[in-house]
Image 1 (tube, rainbow over the protein chains, first blue to last red):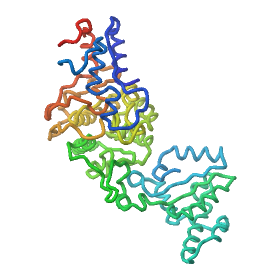
Image 2 (image 1 turned 120 degrees about the vertical axis):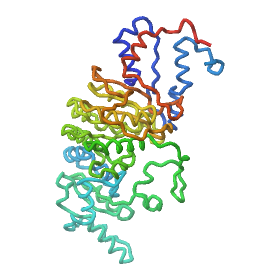
Image 3 (image 1 turned 45 degrees about the horizontal axis):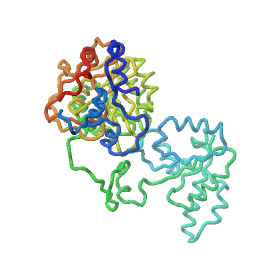
Image 4 (image 1 turned 90 degrees about the vertical axis):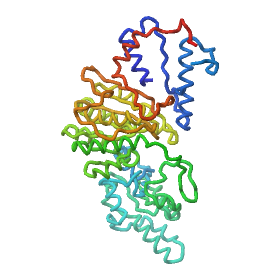
Length: 73
Length: 410
């Protein structure tokens, strides 16, 4: 909350970019204080690694059922 | 329990001020090892050292007498302890007593018998709060820690016998180091650049700056509020202050960032190290919130480095942004190993990618990476051109056609 995604959302809203059903997902740190671990693992838990970003994008596109491994980029 | 390094922060005095009014039964143990994270600084530190050296020793009260009577043999030991107790009963005239505390000390914090007795006595006070001044040595009993003042504060796995910490194989220079080197480079050409740290000269890399410019480096102790307002004052007087403060610790000075820097529109440069998740130090040290709390401020230019080349350019850009506050964030750890340009750019040759744009109306987010760039490292030597704040990406975003209907392309 209140991170970069929020700034982008606000700017998009101000520009009317959300008025016609633009699909957008913000990738964020979770709303808890994560237990400490290696940063890489913590980012992965939060879905902020490549896998998580792709998952987020695919889910926004309604393509949840397509597995990451089975796709060619 | 409070360390002497923490006595440089204002909250300690706020608490003492309130404590004498609100409670008569409180024991404050001042754990004085004459160390902050780095060697301590300032008047309070000198004052405590003076107390320890006996400067405040005045008279002996009877308070400790019963304890002294129980002194063990041999006599020499007893005499030493008697001296310890005598010192423990210093009365009158200390700063803490002026505030309304009983002051007991200084006590040898490694002498368990003495300590227990003194604490039992301190417990008996019912008329005022008590401050027990305990002198300790950092890492006492562990040679590797005793031998290195500023080491083994934050540790990774280490060899217990030698104290050697496991270090990953030497990689590219850290963001911290790149920041410090670039700042030194800039400062060689611009005498107005000064650097401020809050007790973290080594952690922020400013020890390098300090070596090059001892007169232009200020360690204010663990006192981020002062660090920020001090920087504001310097900026108001025409200097170019770089306040190098960990993202998480800048939270301690946020009121000052808002009131004394942003509202005054003073060109303080905030170098926010340890942005994003930091791992070993846990949530207290994670730099999670700076994008939100700095980005919300009118007039603030906020930048986030995705690699060390960008970071170096942001330092150069921040030098040039002289009409408003700016901040740049960068993560803990190593950069990507990009080749750094050797020559400093002249003032007229602003970096294209981060060139400040005067026409943006509120604040800009030049680029964001949530701390370390998680994936997709770019090959060395190639810096990616960066968008000019939000406008262009926005135009692109506005014209973006969701591809949902088409589904993922093969």
